[in-house]
Length: 198
Image (tube, rainbow, N blue to C red):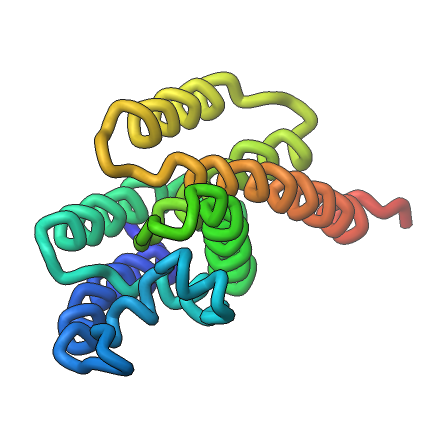
């Protein structure tokens, strides 16, 4: 069964197509509004920092945008079992936004003429956080989870064309740090609650 946060994130990702379509109908200073909501690196260099956040959800309404929305929504539902039990609702979404932002910041290295969008950096951040959260909480490395993550990361970042691998890498690396922090925090809370001597 998919958690509430998994359903909400999947719906949010799919709604990005509708937002992108509506935004493409309006023009601001000769540029379709949608380009201000996607991560258009040249506009980010000029101060459009809001797009580092909006591009996590807003998609360009074409074949690539539709494919990205469907694939990411399915991915969220698929990995939800790993994430829902490891994080609270708030931790889940804060991790998604923080790791997605980290991925988008690293993606700026692609140069001024790159336009990127999609939730993949945040999704990889969530999965990477599940890996290190499990390790920090249980004190052992789940090799099956690590192997699954590495295969999916490699396949989605390097074997599929038109994918922003820097955004994936940035999200995953920051996710590893956040997951470790959350695991340690949850472990301390668990020991304090259930293991205190009387």
